[in-house]
Image: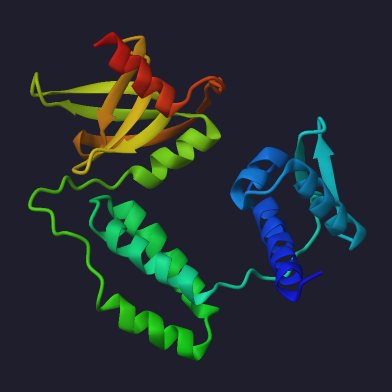
Length: 235
């Protein structure tokens, strides 16, 4: 085997191990598409990891997961990955939601702490040489982090919402399903219990919100892209 080929496989296997940490179950097809390899190659790589002592389980013969309790060494960040995070930071600082800025800033501090000294110096240089376009109109909000958690934990959220068209504030209980950014403001797609249908709510128009302890049934079939497609077909 050519040394480069061997190294490429070692790099891929290590990357697969990291990918398995990224979510509860990762399908063989997801791995194959990410690395542009065949399913047969994925099966062989998974087998190599299992033989090396990594406790990888399978689900329905299509997905893989790392058994709970197994501790993996810290993930090392490359300089290129750190640079990508700096670009992401500039975009996030320009998007308007205070909670997202705070969460990402905290994450970035943790990531920077594991960089080597020369990598930290390089990142500092790059920070002062990258900028997102400055938006003349930016809708400020501060509830994105709360809404994200409500989506993942299927929690009902109580909101006071300022309607732009009627210029009135109404009390709503919503079941958050998805989020998207309009280039000016964040929008949550949610089932509105008051109107009894799926509605959209701009986060900058939410005057108050409170996460309740009540949960709602997770809508397995809801996908944001499908939602947009259905809307375009209706118009």
